[in-house]
Amino acid sequence: MTTSYTLEQLSIDQSIEYRKYVTEADVHAFADITGDNNPVHLDAEYAAATSFGKPIAHGMLTAGFISAAIGTRLPGPGCIYLEQTLKFRAPVFIGQEVVTTVKVTDINTRRRRATLKTVCECEGKVVVTGEATIMLPAAV
Image (cartoon, rainbow, N blue to C red; front, top):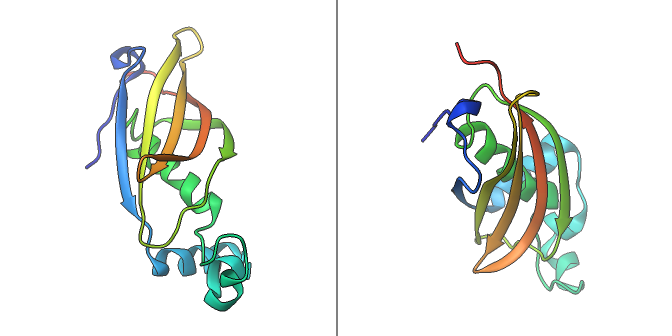
């Protein structure tokens, strides 16, 4: 589902959810694409000896769901991602569903920018928090 909002259609506290289950294939594809082959993500035996006890998804894979939510749902296609802060709060395990929420917290009409609160959760637990700044093109 792709939606698209103009700056004029945004309002403070407007929000959406984006949901995605993390698969082993996702983690391996992310490692292949980025070159991040840290064994805590890819090697069950290695990960078993860590405090996590099993492989975890890359934090930036989880953060990528924020990009997907912004680029496809709020505000959607045409926006330009300018800035993102991230705090990784807890691990994401293979098989978990990541629920990403994006919420409008500020709108700067003059600069055509919006600030968004970004949160990823698994099973009701916050795993990533942050804030994004985006720019929206002028309405056609």
